[in-house]
Image (cartoon, rainbow, N blue to C red; front, side):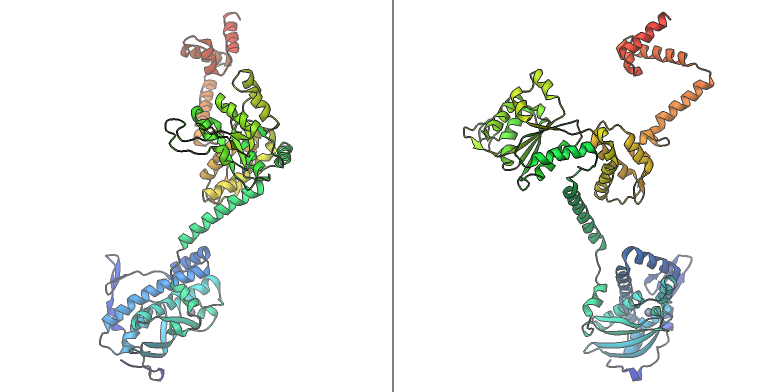
Length: 552
Ligand SMILES: [Zn+2]
């Protein structure tokens, strides 16, 4: 009990009692310190671990982890101290901490001064550390440090003393062998007696790195998406003449309220162009509402577009506005407008003519101010000729039509688009990739893109999923069937093997052709059209070959 002043500090007691707690059971694969399982590690392992921690987490986080690791060990040993030397004078009991540190091969501790009052729970101590293993492995890896580096040992001293005294005591290194000193020197005080207590305590609080990483990752994804949306209107990327022409035409239409009809194949990005038109217009702060007319059943489309009054039909138990009303002040994008039912076409014509609409089952007319952008991949003039589309509606829609080019007509944009999709989808799938190989890019440029930009996006997304994290997207990730050696190319391999076999047997092309035609006719039950389909020929060609065979 009471106080031990520095000038009367005795030497550390004998540590036989502590050493006796250490038991090796080599045949059982276990080492014990009293009741606790211990592990004998090489310092080179810890050196490698520490290096990896510093390099992947940064020095500050690695430091915190090691301090907290030491802190836990120190707390355990404080319990051992009370059990091992229950009746010994306080200094002897306390010595279990330094001595355990020594016995486990980490450092030699020499007490310099120590002042403990168990009643008032004050503590002040200074110790010298000789040949610290942490300083040694740091020096071996990185050379002389600017800051003390014995992190887990310092954490140990804090953990031990805090548990031992029942008061939060923090140690710090006044000097460190890792900084080029001959020995390390540590000082411990109650936390509130350090001026920079907050700074010191920071390392003793666990930080949820994984949570922070996930949060950061989702922030990055969101920021990236916004960034690309703002800079390039989503997937509207390119610099080819055809692409720039479309952008210019749309920019000119943006200022006015003119109805725009977007033409072009499926997947060329008509929806993106419509959105860009809206964002470039004075209506950009008002709603942009998109409707795919082909995706809504014909009997629901009117209610969907123009709204419903309660009781209009069975099941309409609530009044609701349609998409037109919701787009008020903004832009309504009608995709696949050729799919509209005759009734919906009539109602749409009326809105375009009068700028007002009636909800289903309502007699009131409502004014709406909507800029309409319609789109189709259909030949609407042909639909008019067939009586499926109203001529007067087409006339209204066709005021300002813009044809969005197919991707194969703007093949020079493929590399930029591909890179855009790599950025977009790799953040989405949490992958970091170095890009696309030259060979893969060449294949992207050579492909004919029947599915246009949508297909390009899909292919790149699949490539990102198949590529190794940190690597590049390779040709086989994009076109598995076209690259020899990939699983889907096995058909081609089989065909090659068959060809080899036939050649070995001296089979002639004309014979092979005859056999193939015969088999196909057999399969098709003598139907020439069906057999032609099996062979990838037109009916006329097959017919000609069959006739040629009869009368050569
Ligand atoms: Zn040190």
